[in-house]
Amino acid sequence: MSELKMDACPICSAPVSLWNSKTTEAGEFKLDRCQDCSYVFVNSRPSLEYLVDFYTNNTHDNSFRDEAEVSLSDILKKEADWPNSSVDAERIVGTAHSLVKTTSPEGALTLFDVACGFGFFTREAINLGFDVTALEISNSDRKIASDMNNLEPKNIPFEEFNEADNSFDVIILSQIVEHVLDINEWIGKAQKLLKSDGLLAVALPNFDNLFRYILGKNEPYIIPPEHLNYFNGRNLQKLLSNHGLSVEKIEWTSKVAPSAVRKLPLGKLAEPIFAPLVGISLNLIDLLHLGIFVTVYARKK
Image (cartoon, rainbow, N blue to C red; front, side, top):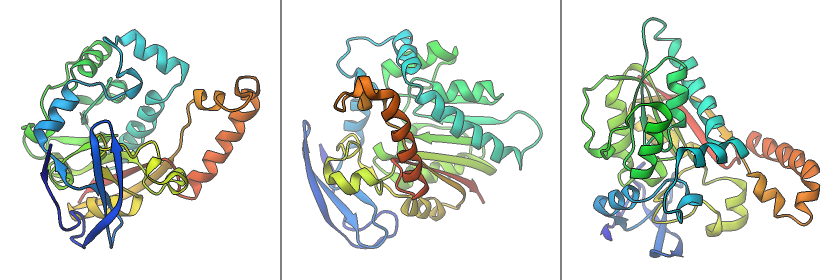
């Protein structure tokens, strides 16, 4: 599975050293950390063929990994029980729409939803009037996205996607950059696909979140080889700046499913009390930039 060992940080070229190692069902993985910008990544890297095969045959939602078949009704039921993807889509696509409208006030706007998953971001973009192109290589996710939006996502890896430069007003990379093999290839390609003054929105797990400081390598989003890249707000901004993208806004957000609250002692009985307290605590964590997720909005200069 391993193909390439990197000797320097792909963001800032500084030396790297071992941060930790983690064993999963796929084997043992070394996690190196940049001595300058603190970017952490799986090193050695798997092959692109391995990743394409993995994501073609799996859904992006781990809670459905053991299901023989997942339907749109299954996804909508889960979303109704705990609005999550739809809330993220409304926040991120809505913010991107507001920011790009300041420089492109006239005419239809184009949006590219890369690795669109079940299609919630695509749905929100269509509702806001975007002309949407979507891409998804997971067979099950692509079918659900198509059923949800009556729009067939392209079945091709982003690395092989061919479209003219300067094609899109907005590109969404939500919960995907942590998975990719070559972060510079992805961000560089996104920058070229954006129109002048176009906006790139990148959302992913924040390596500097409070729970990672407490749990170390056992933090739930440290899951190699599924997650290959571990960013904080600073090195993510550095990566985008390297490719001619100017950061306009950055957000930290934290969410905990109600099922997690219910696992606490007497959680089901005390959920009406626990849930508001959890919400207040997470808001404070976000204000301190220790939130579970980070979203960066950057404009093509």
